[in-house]
Length: 290
Image (cartoon, rainbow, N blue to C red; front, side, top):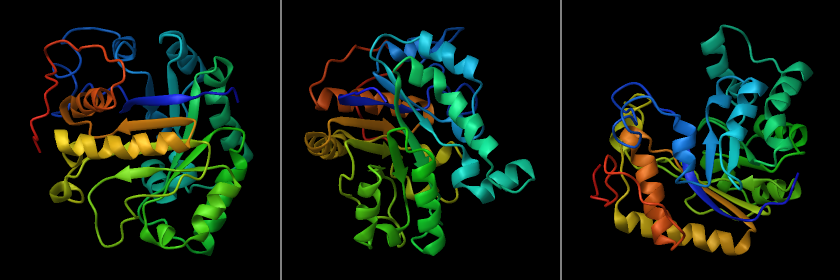
């Protein structure tokens, strides 16, 4: 893959058109607009979340790559069939038996980003139930080997991984980034700070809405706006990691009503990076709203 360097800050996904947590009227203006073009005016990268549910059509991906400015990068979330077999079974009614065809279909969906030099990394997110045992280590090794042609980042969420010093060695051996996450902390949660295990650093900020984390739905779980002091705290972590890694990504996933882009702008400012002011429908001053 082509070399990329720098610090890229953005959000996990860019399209939240429906529901109470919509970005319409909060980040995006009301009315019909091209959301990706609008988003790319303010941010240098975005995480593709739709690829988690199904590999996107390559022609659609090609159109995405053509609508963003020079230097803009995409990261893509790995298809849930590889990382969340139970969720895949519930969604489709079929077992998540992986075939070479599945691998080929997913890799084909990334080709337009590779060809246009816009693929920053591939994100493999595993569920909190994915533990550091023989089965888990085999799956992790298989994913690493299968997708070794990409810059790979792995999100592990069970404490058994960070409790074991061998995890960092395993990831470093495969030049795989260990995703650092911010989310509510529970008894089985992974450690807050993790080592840099590859040439990239990768952060995902999910919010700290502990009250609704397990009881809320896919919108209310992420109803958390980071305060100014919390943004400063997270910015220090990102800055420190970027000093160790040539390429760094930081994505906000607290997507309720445009909280994610709002906090992403706050982090860009905290790190004293160039920022374009957004229009009035999205106030920029963090109010500590939870």
